[in-house]
Length: 113
Ligand SMILES: Cc1cc2nc3c(=O)[nH]c(=O)nc-3n(C[C@H](O)[C@H](O)[C@H](O)COP(=O)(O)OP(=O)(O)OC[C@H]3O[C@@H](n4cnc5c(N)ncnc54)[C@H](O)[C@@H]3O)c2cc1C
Image 1 (tube, rainbow, N blue to C red):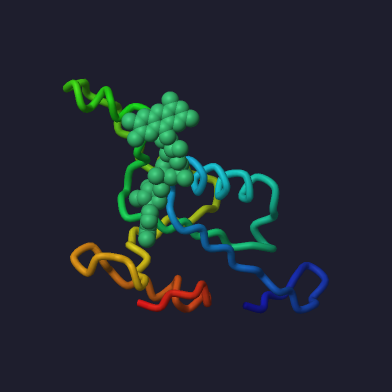
Image 2: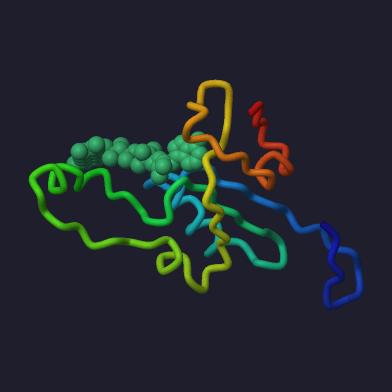
């Protein structure tokens, strides 16, 4: 993707796609967004669900406790990280949960689905 910069020169914007917004993916996307400039990178976070799942608290769910929802739209508000709700299809993914994510495929992330 080419953009002009303040000096009128062509500028290549890199695209970063993070697949899976668990602890690893969400932290990676957030740190990249803080460290990199928006004019240099476009960061997309792909996850199947709109809310962050705190796996370390799942035992609380198992005993009937309510957990506060943590929507990604709030977590990443103002960061520039774009969230795409999709299940990245692949050879081993179950067809019932598969939803093709054309942006991921377009980024050349190796989807074979
Ligand atoms: C009950 C429980 C208690 C735990 N307690 C602790 C603890 O006390 N201390 C500790 O250190 N660890 C604990 N763990 C382990 C910890 O939760 C995991 O190590 C951690 O969640 C791994 O993080 P992750 O980001 O790699 O994966 P995950 O947290 O599993 O996140 C993966 C994300 O990727 C998404 N995803 C996966 N595949 C796709 C796909 N194909 N397309 C789109 N999205 C996809 C998922 O929906 C999910 O949001 C616990 C785990 C459980 C289940």
